[in-house]
Length: 317
Image (cartoon, rainbow, N blue to C red; front, side, top):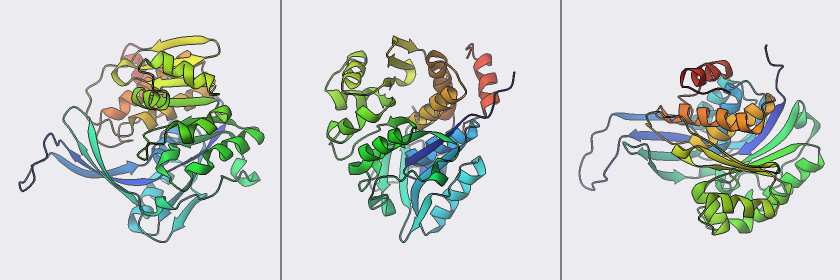
């Protein structure tokens, strides 16, 4: 039975031009290291999540900023090719954000990041105009920490989204400034769906156990809390209780952007009407597809192709 067109998502987050080098298992100064791959990819939490949503058939509109350079042109073209509405993406004078990702043989990575125009991007709360909200039922914040000028306004943006009648979600990601709960805490009462990985959950709560950390985040105001556990899948804590969803067994090439793709997969499943448990399983599949290729979004498939892949790998969603 075909699905009806799912409702849309308004997403905000950074857009980054990623340069990927694989594999790099040692750094030797004053020497030459031969590698198999040097390439470029879609990058940035906002771009990756939006791309994943669009690839999975969910209408998505991205609020972000890129520079007035060729990297900005290329990222916008890539997003549009997937079906992302980039109308609210501004062009700023200066260099687009750029990351060099050194990827180890086991898929782990080290990032060298130049923030470029993202240093001053989105210096005010997001506006929910009629045109931006057309066809949209959710507002998603993909890593407020990546946009220094926006992070003080993330909570107000989420409050406004709630007031406008939108569902809300937030993917925390890593805080290079180390403020963690100081900036995320004010957001939590306005977040219906919170994504964190195991280390982020610990940094936000000072609790080692993911289940205890999820409970603390719910007590701080978040609705449903999803803890991404990498090769162990994910843990979901909602008003109806807690459950875990196992990961899919795949050969890991590059984990860059896997968390963004997971979040996109989870939201896409919810917008297709799947219950939380099935959404968790589907998100695990999207994350697994992401890590099979070098680059954040190179391994992603369409909704139907992902469902077929799940069936072939022993899952059922």
